Amino acid sequence: MEWAKIFIDVSRFLDKAEDFYERGEGSIGKPVQSYEHDFTDNCAVEGMRVSDAWEVTPSLCAERIQQDPNGLKNNAGLAVASNPFFRAAYRVLNPTCKKKYDDYSAIKWLEHVAKSEGVDNVIIWLGANNALGTIFDLKVKMSPGTSGTYGSRKDPKPTEYNLWHPKDFHHDYALLLDKVETALASNKTNDWKVYVGTVPLVTIAPMLEGFGDERLVDDPRLPLGQATTKFRYCQYYKYYGVSEETAIRGENKHMKFRDALFIDKVIINYNETIQKLVAAKNAKIGRDAFFVVDISDALSNMAWKRNSGMPSYEFPPELQWLYPPLNTKFYGVSPEGAITDGGIFSLDGIHPTVIGQGIIASEFLKTFQVHGSAGAQASIDWQRVIQDDTLRQDPIAVLHHIVEVDQAIDFLVQAVSLMGK
Image (spheres, rainbow, N blue to C red):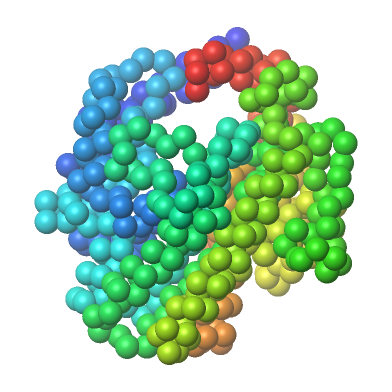
């Protein structure tokens, strides 16, 4: 009876969200209420791949939404607003819905602000979504590797690829840095700086849960024979909360060890590409203008299971003695409402919590301070960050019931599979 009530409550919630984004105040063409600026300082959109920085514009978003036959009709049941990526991108890239900004991509906004106001510092953290689809699909579908742009949003058909070949990633990232340099060519500030985040190993995300035999592998971030540490992998990987019996039944319900290791090695190559392209760009410009912030290493060193429960990452002092202690495991809460695990990743097992976002911000801040973009006294208000993290302040006591009822989760997994999702 509780599960029936949950289904009804979730359906109602999603229906309200669908109404808001497809026909209500959140729909295309309606400005974001109470927002008084033409642009946002943060042009990032959840789901952005590297090439989206210059390909995605408000007009493209509107076109994709209008082409979808489900885009405007009221769908019953567990229906969500159509085209969530394009709806979010439209609101970020043109919050005031002014026609003159319909062709403004994130790169175009950078150029606009550089010319009109001047830009001191730019943060770029793209690339994870060029690999993240592998853990949604639990298999690898790699782009051709012909040094081209694949999965263009301009193509009405969704891309079949979920992992960009290193050559294709190199092609897109080189274009990205070229376009950023061009956008800043007329910048009112001469001593601008660009901070580039590396791509995290997506297989660290606790959405994936390992099972079967464990494998210890030399740290793949280092050349063969030079690793002093080992990474722990498992024979198989499945979605968190799905039983091993359900996961092992079908090819599309689990990922093999070889694929997890392969994905990691591809992303490690991405990060080597970023380092090389940044070095080449600085040499061309004649000064250190681009700087790498190694978010990937930070998260790899933070990973609990990958490091056999002995992560080497040093948390900021304000977080080191936080209790219960933080780790990268899936968010866990006891029947009494006490946090047992997690704190870095949110309930989807992929995106960071408020504290997790704070840790990422602190990594950028440290690099800012080293290169003169922030003073030595600049700091993050950790007290507010911790207070704003509602998963920590108000633990979800019912969560253990949902996670532990394997039969219910297995039923939902089978139902979604039958729907072809």
